[in-house]
Length: 308
Image 1 (tube, one colour):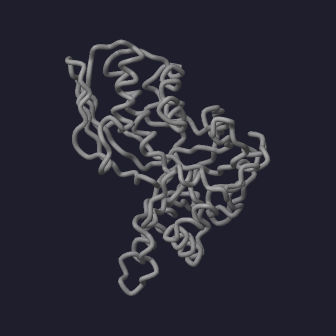
Image 2: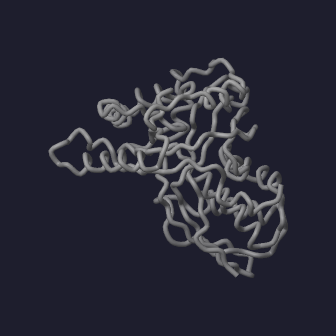
């Protein structure tokens, strides 16, 4: 038995406000998660010896015991007492250190897929509890819907979002999450907003000739810290602004996204960015490493693999 080409989509944070800090050091957030059509993929072969074996492409220098995919598989074993194991291969497309949740998404897809392959039959809420022990962003991928998030990111409320497409831009510098949240320059007292304010804003956001003209809701409180601390990320933001693109950083960086109404518009923008990257006479575009045109997803592709 096996499951092949299991998708693990990226996410973007449509806004991210830091509203406080708990005594244990975790930050209190408000954010909105949306999945996008940029994927890592995973293959799982059933083993009957209980071993979890990682093979193939993985993050360079990451030991198996520290890999969220391996940790997720072992967490499911421990929670259910199953004697089954898995041979796991995965291919990374989502860049690490980009604020796109690739590692968390891989862990979530592992929990969902192995719950199916091993027939352990945990509910979505059970898997979300396991995921939270692995990382604050893991539960939203198991939740499977665009969500307004509070707490440390684990209190999730589904939200309806309009059809949108995005160009995701990767600078030539990665950003470790911990360094951003520990910065003394980080704003930690943003006023709280209600879900209705966020959803009403999206309902009335205007378009003109197919283009989104209302701008972004709120802000990303982490962005100014990252731009000041990571010069290549700041240079990428400045380059995007010079192209006339309204870009926002996702998560703790380093990637940015630009919003469009249709995937066709996003694809044109992405090709223009790639063309400038490849133009050797345009050296200032060297601060960009890659760009993707991605549809915004209305649900996680594995949402219906688990029961409520």
